[in-house]
Length: 455
Image (cartoon, rainbow, N blue to C red):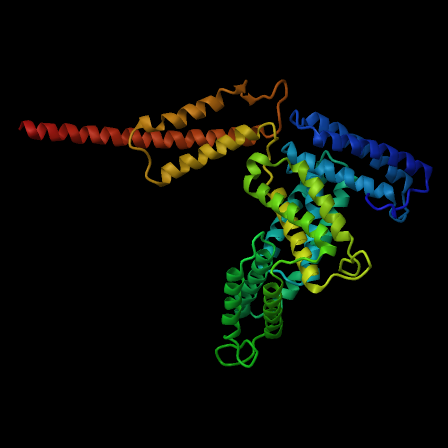
């Protein structure tokens, strides 16, 4: 939407749909910005239904045709993206609309992994697991789901594309002999660690030289520039890993030489990307207490805009000159790292409305404490459990007719919160029983000791 190069629709009927969708998008943006109250399910569903109505009209108009992308498609994409993040915010994370934003982010990640040709099995395993979960959501909705068939079909196509890209990346890894997998993964880790050190506020020469030492150790295991097996034969994929090692060593030299210095022509982009990366990093640490999933929309839009400014994979300065390799790699690292954080935050989204998150988070903390007490041997007396029992009862007493209410609303995620509450009660009960048994044993032993003294 930031580029005027995207043309308006030529069909007057599409123009009317564009006008309606623009109004809906603006309402979604206003709702996203409003921090004075919790986002309610009914508000989200009302706007969701309005988007679906416009999609039905659009499908009728475009039946059997495939027109070139225009501004209507971009606004519709924004609406779907916002609706998707709203579904996460209200706790409906296991429904089709919530999957839309996740597939967008996965597609971005796979595009970058393919372009850079730097990825580890862990990267692919995580994405494969997430796509497997999306399979379940789509299959469940396809049978007799409440959501728009258009959206289900759209997501199925996006997911199929992601699976195809993932398959091609897996084929690249399969070219490596098993004995090289660990070395390859370690090189990827070192490359990323160097890029991280390169973008820290204070550049650490010591840290980069330590990583350089790790690279030298790997290089010393090679024989005549090749990776060989116990019999001295070159193993499959040796040239791929050797080439990656050269890239790592060369990047290390460049990083030590430049020490984080970015030319003025690209300083503004760098600062924007550093701020985005740092904000997302903070959110990944304080997610349970600070994240409203709809906030990710602004980060995504900024990242998409900078990413799409590239010409033939690189950025140009004001005079049309491409960025040097050091600048290009540094900016790409920040973009990819930020997309990675967004992916993590989406995947970690709890199936609970933000209205219930304060209660849910307190129960999560209480459960962790009770588990820790249990694992460390329990308590010495029932009295030691009083603080946990009081907290548990105070949270339970917030329920009205068995439900956690916010005003007159019954927020999404009741099942998840009640299940967590029950788990805390079970843990508390187990610890109390164990404490009572311990006290009874101690009393019995004390009584037996007293009788011996009398005799």
